Amino acid sequence: MFNKKTGIAAAALLLLLLWMPGKAVSADAAENVPNVIPEMLTADFWIDKLPEPDQVIMDGEEIASFNRDIIRTQPELIYDLTDYPASLNKERLTKLVTMRPFPDEDRYSNGRLVDWAYYQNLKEQMNLPGIGEKNEVAYGVTVRRTNIRTFPTSDESLSEPDDKEFDLFQETAAGPAEPVLVLHHSLDGGWCFVQIYNYCGWMPAADIAVAKDKESWLAYVKPSEYLVVTGNRLGLGFPGPLPVELTMGTKVPLAGGREKGGVVPGQAKDYEVLLPVRGANGELLTETALIPGGADVSIGYLSYTRANIIRQAFKILGERYGWGGMFNARDCSAFVMDVYKSFGLMLPRNGDEQERSAGVTVSFEDLSTRQRYELLDTLLPGASLHTPTHELLYLGRHEGLYYVIHDITSYGDASRPNPDGTLGKIVLNRVAVTDLSLPRRNGMLFIDSLTGGKQIQTRAGSSDSSSDYNVSVYLNGTLVDFPDQKPFIDVSADRVFVPVRFVSEALGAQVEWVREEQKILINKDGKQIALYVGRKEVFVDGRKYTLDVAVRLVNGRTMVPLRFVSEALGAGVKWTGQGSGGRVDITG
Image (cartoon, rainbow, N blue to C red):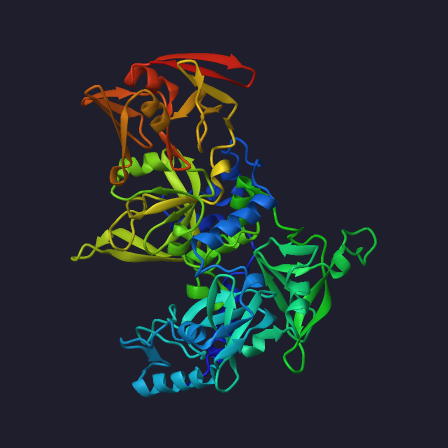
């Protein structure tokens, strides 16, 4: 068909003139976004609202364990490549290579309608007859940022002749120094069918250097000491004739396993790293490169704190939107993925997969707008928020509005409604800060489009860092053993929270969870009590009572303030402070 390289180069030049990665976003970037003021376009604005922004959420061992949980929950999507089978049989490899069918709707390429003969040529290039009974896996590393395609071609596939923002053959992008497993080759040898840790598809063979064996590959991809790029992008002029750009989350070995001294006396130390290069026969070689000591990098992964999550997100603020990694950019889920990659977290590629992955999840399904905002109060900044087609990072609340940072293409113009209920289009096409009352093109507010929220952390670490777990609960003189979520003191609210189910059932009540309404129903001695996650109101036999703090969902458990136990369940409660914690005695 045709080659896109010339067009992409021109687009990249234009993009470079319009926007330079890493540059601060000017105040006027907020002008066409309602309810956003220039001060909100800095990470510190949101970090200053956090009670303990530098509290570690998970350490390195906990993150490694969390990654294993991700692999267990989505074994067909996320892989520890070091444990991948050394070979694949014909049935499994054929299933992988043919997992994405050819489109049955009209597609356009280079302004022309694609015919069926084109797909037949693609099928020939997929080289299905070349799949043997046993297919050895080869071990490679990307030498530059590259694309993973649906089929072995760089030809665009558009639903409309001029809609060049969405090439539907573009699956995702992989950064430089990314470990890849080569599973198969195209008929002409120009493409490899590869598996990276969270995606598979066709990658240009010229972008992969293949190790001679697994041992030499492991030596490169699992170094004892390494540098992680923590800036949005880091440009290097060496090695090779073309500049090398390392993107956020890229991990490269430190040469010799140690830092090297700066070449200019009195300046910060430079880092000597090993970059992968492709030899004359496609083999994996390395060349040494110096990264300036003042560059935005880290020895090892960044410390996983809420402040660092927000800082990483704001380093990408203003960057152009790129579907599937087009235009050397990111889309909404890749934006979230790369932020968390800075901490060593192996998130799935797509937003719906991330929503189903490991972590602490809340559901917005079937809630009113007010209930949705109340549920947001149970989440912490840095949580990912999900709609069926979009993903956002939660920043927090300011003057009654709830804000996010996300890679957004457009939103709806309420002043230009269409007869079918949709709204006129206001294009952003970049990473931006907005609030959740912003309308979408379909007329719904973002808040009303949310399906779920995700705290990317283990259940043990899912409560606010201002919580004190030094709380013991005794029921009629016997210490209560809570199997998972423990009672805690919310220091900021000065209230004790207990798991409502365990306390209620211990007092002889029956408890029912109504997921659709985020509601707990408690029945005891003919009395029915209803309470809702994120709300202060409690209804006892239809009569409303108001608690001083809202009910919370923590680690899948509904947590209520201790006052609820005495007022709604009719139990006697005594609190005895003991140092930073205390003892609760419940009688009933």
